[in-house]
Image (cartoon, rainbow, N blue to C red; front, side, top):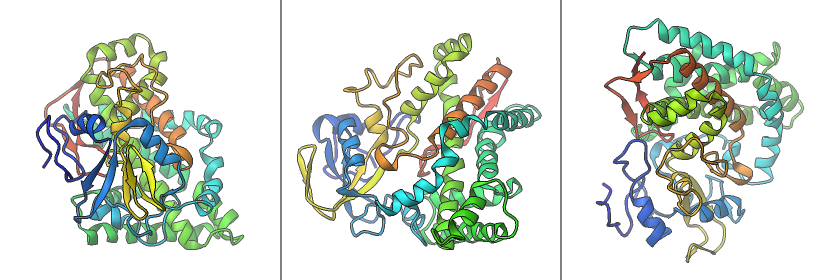
Length: 401
């Protein structure tokens, strides 16, 4: 359990509790002031360093002396589920250069801003369709089930080349894979299931390729020997799960945040052109990668007044960094007029999120459409937040209109 406000355990259990569902743990503020590099205790009893200052977090994420390779001794896992999620062939975001760079370059074209912008009409069509489904439900309706989750699931399925009719299969396994409530065996089995699923789809692309990311990986990369099938499975699994889990949680949390700040909501309704700025502030304010970004030191490194020894794990806290008052004045205030573009909700450095252009466009379209079509949108009772998720979000968000 977290300690009361004003006191900090010497090596608190991590992840820390969230007394307020839309705010980071209170301890981050105290740690940032008193022990910006603090020892924490992970689920298995091992210890790591937690960094809570913006500059320190950015420094770690750009310093290649801190490895992203989950296979290295000392790499910090925050739960059995996260440990199991890297089962099988290591996904490229858990690799260091040059392997990370080699695979990432193969995907850059599909996620370039101009190519994602060209998808706006298709994404708008998907959003409109699920909004009609939401409107057809009795009130109050669950925004997560009817709107927030299916939109990014359908978008990434179309982009990747996965049949959307399989959404219940890949959603349920993705959630089980990343939940801290799952056992190591449950998460590991979900990884196996999804890898086999991607493998079957990849096999079909050898003879029947389409205009999608998976087909290009198989035809342009695997067939030429640049990737093997295990790499294709790992890459496809990463894109599929990360491509819907993060954005689904951001859509639901963004609606909850806007409806909880009526003056900000009114300003956005009065000037829809603020949506781009509002999305950046929502990304900063919510920072859904709430377990932080793990790294392991490759050599002894001085940071935040301590020496991190070779082989010691580090958790770079994205929520703490994005609420650092040295970089964002009154960070606890949600303000859509703020210039929040310096946030690091998508990480920083060479490993920052490949899909961030897609996430931004999906958020802009989903929120704009929802607020335009439902001027009476309001929260109903029964919201269920999900702190056990590796990506913070909601299980349910009942709304009426």
